[in-house]
Structure formats: structure tokens, C-alpha cells
Length: 252
Ligand code: PGA
Image (cartoon, protein in one colour):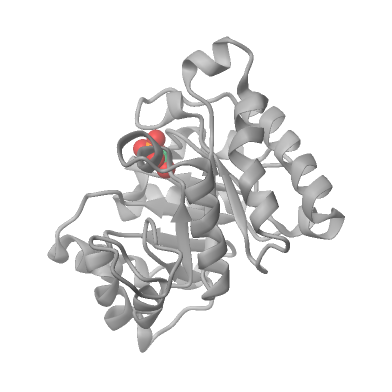
């Protein structure tokens, strides 16, 4: 499976910083044999489509950090999947733990957004993960099962390039990474859950990413695990150099 290295830019970068990053990465992405994706603030999506449309690379994608599940409507402050697609978006992050923690995203609303994404032709990266207290109470898989249950009941068939990102909340932005073994253990279980809900073929096709303090220094070990098919990278995706080093680690 071709790995996916995705950069979640959260609420960072000005327009000129976005332009700089895009121009730099454009010079280098031809040489990679992984898929790369960037998730900027939605307001910057048009910059991606302007910069990359003329030289659209097959394995370079972008998209928003969230979308609504309807194509349009009276939903102040939300982003339509169709509007995101107008600017070349092909993927979308769904259910990130910061959406769950600060903006009331629930397991059900995240599943609805994933279904909306698929309906309107965006490939979701659906995020799951436990808090430190949940891990310490040995509840990791119980929590992940709860996060996945509405997804499996609403989405009967995943899209062609559906991803699940395992992001332990205690590892996001903290500098604490799950060990490669911890990531593998959970991701192997997630693959089994995909297989029992969506079947063997989809389990082999869905990419399971790891996210949480992935950096050039730890990327190779994590990405070498059999059930780690890529990474969702926050802080280390903000610089072209570190983002590409992580991509290179996936390449090896
Ligand atoms: P981090 O963020 O790499 O800065 O820990 C990961 C994420 O939030 O997706």
C-alpha cells in the first residue's frame, strides 16, 4: 500500500507562508513514492488550487480540516464539501481530537461528516484515539470502538481511499510519541475492526495512519510497523524540510 503522509496545519500560517511552503514543496514532490497531503485553514485552499493546478501532481493532495455533511444550508460558520471541492480538495480530516475537545464534535457527528465527505467525493481521514486517563485505565480499545461504532453503522462501504488516523490524545502536540509497538498494537486492532465491519478487501485497502508528535527522528521506526500505513503530522508538517524528511522515512 502506498503510504500517506498528511500535514495538519491547524490554525497556523499566513497566506505568504502558505505560498512559500507550496513553492518549495513543488520543486521536490516529483521524486517521492508516497502520497502527500496538506490540510491548511480552509481560507487558504484557493492558494493551493492556484499554485498547483497548472502542475497538478498525481500524488499530492490537499483539503480542509473539517466539513459539514450537507452540501449547503443555514449552517453559519460551517464549510460545505462542495465549496472545498471547488478549490481542488480531494481529502478531508474528520473528527480530529481538537474538534472533539474544543468544538463539541461527537462520535455520531464525526460519522455523519465522514458519510457527507464520501457522498460528495472527498476522501476522509477519520481520527480516533484515547486520552491518557483512558489508556491508563486500559480502556483504549473500548474508547476506539465507541468512536468507530457510528462510522461503521452509517458508512456501509468506505470510499476508495478512506483512512483512519490513530492519534492518542496524550501524544498530540506534547512531544510524547506512542512507541512503535503501542501504535502497531492499536492499529492492528483497528484493522481487525475494519475487516469485521467492511470486509477483508477494504481492511487491506484502508490506510491506517499514526498521528501524535511524529517527527523526522521517530518517523522511520513508527512507519516501519506493518499496520502503520502513513502519518498524520501536526507541528513537524509546518516546515518543508521536516515534512519531507518524514515522507522520505516512509519511502524507505
Ligand atoms: P502533532 O499533531 O504532530 O503536532 O502532535 C498531530 C495532529 O494533531 O494531527
